[in-house]
Length: 35
Image (cartoon, rainbow, N blue to C red; front, side, top):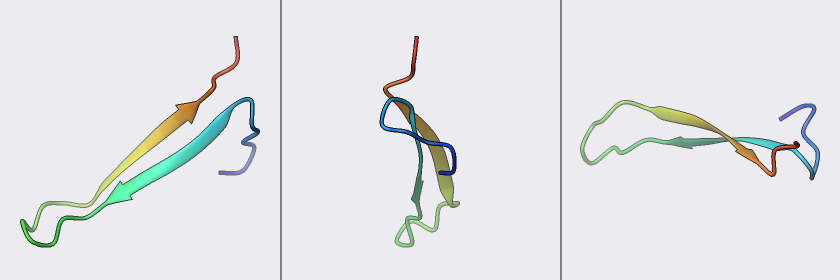
């Protein structure tokens, strides 16, 4: 994600379960947030 650094890494995790036909799911994860 733009603006991410190793000290404050923003990533998006997405999933789609086609076997169960459940809706698309996107989650934002913040790794190593600063103080």
